[in-house]
Image (cartoon, rainbow, N blue to C red):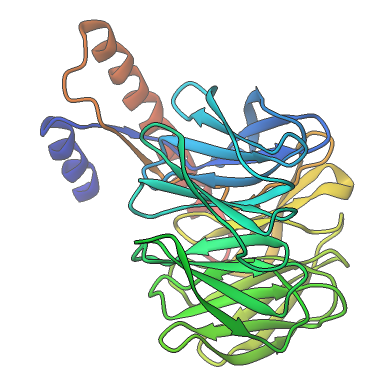
Length: 359
């Protein structure tokens, strides 16, 4: 109730707040579409046509926009999350793959694997600010620190991890690791540690301490690592493996506490804002697998197009903030309807979470 009151105060102070159960944005690489999934029911509520071979996915911090990187087009589609329409298409680099949004909401970063570069895009106008060249060999995954000051880049043909300083968009460090190459990148909520999946023949997840950009641990999880996600409380890291598992690492001692068998070549992974569910892309089966994190068991598997392959942070926050201080009369009606529908979705999602055994 306190959260609702706080949001109402913000609303009255000239911002519009829309409540919604988290949405999961599934990039269907083979069908050139993004599927919008309501996490309250795990049902597809909308389908959006984007560019060719969508894969990299990011959601703006306020949930207002979704950024989809189209691998074959070398473009990024910008989706308005309020009406699920593509409002812009931005040209990026060769074999663009990963994408990450700065927590300040002002910039998006795209890793261009073929060009060894990272494209920096200004989100207010969706214009390319600069392209950072010679980042590393085949940059592929990336993540921004919680303070927005640095971008850590995994490199598909490089044992080093690149670090970009966002204030001047320059590469300020190249961190040696024990892996021959890295791909997925996730940063703990306190910004102190970076977890990277190691690809090729490597079997360890790499852990970097950000205070001195040093590798402090290599956690054995097996071959075929793909993507990585950290729980909102920072206590656990989930790692997908295309060989058919999701490994759970306890961050306090960097120990694998359980390994969950998951069919369908697990790929991208993200965790709901409340930390209760992990959503895993399982492209070989054309499905998304949902893991209940309290018990680390599969709670749902649902069909999601031909080849679901979202890579990055593809789940929205529960609250979407819209900067629109003076709505028109018609917009007020739309806003009221959105708030009512959103509240229904939030309550349904919370009932679903409360009904799960072991919560």
